[in-house]
Amino acid sequence: MENKADCRYEPWFAWAVELQALAQNGLAYTENKFDKERFERIREIAAEMVACKADMPKETVEGLFCGEKGYQTPKLDTRAAIFKENKILLVKEDGRWSLPGGWVDVTESVFSNTVKEAKEEAGVDVRPIRVIALQDRNKHNIPRYIYSICKVFVLCELLGGKFESNTETDASGFFTLDSLPELFTEKNTYDQIKMCFEATASEHWETRFD
Image (cartoon, rainbow, N blue to C red; front, side, top):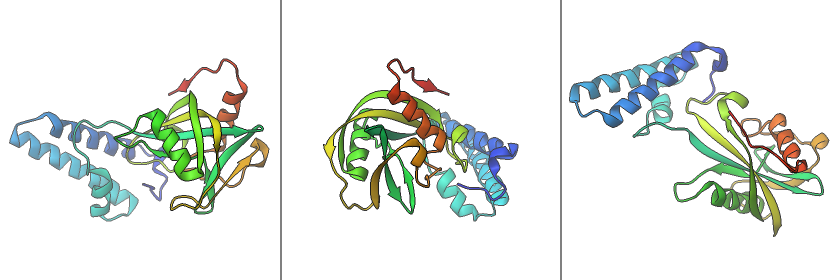
């Protein structure tokens, strides 16, 4: 969710996120009906804060912010770093380019989701061989989202395949670091792509994590 005032730098945003998480966690564990009412109200206040500051309908914020149950944890997003002749594979979506990837489905592992997304978005078969980095998305990408995401960058061996028309991406291509197209920076930045180049060139890469 994007805030017109660039909420990455405003403390109220972090407070609202923390309040929502505390309320959700409280609802997951309490059995007292009065405490449940209090936690529901805290969650509602957090949504009202975001709706007010971001100039969005409260119902929209609640749909994005208050729809989950159980103990709150970050979502997982995998991104496949696939190289050929010192060029990295990117896919095009809505006019911008990113590493193939997406949410880790509940039926998938990081390994299998990386394989699945590479096939679905780029049409290629890959073998994940190394985790490059585990990153807190809100520390590296903009705009900041109201929920937290752990981005998993995975170095992959290209086995074969080719791009095929699909409902998620419009094209694919291999690019050098100094000839990157316009990036889908919500999904990956120049620094993240550069990190992938550094990882594939290193014989003893150590996984980076926040």
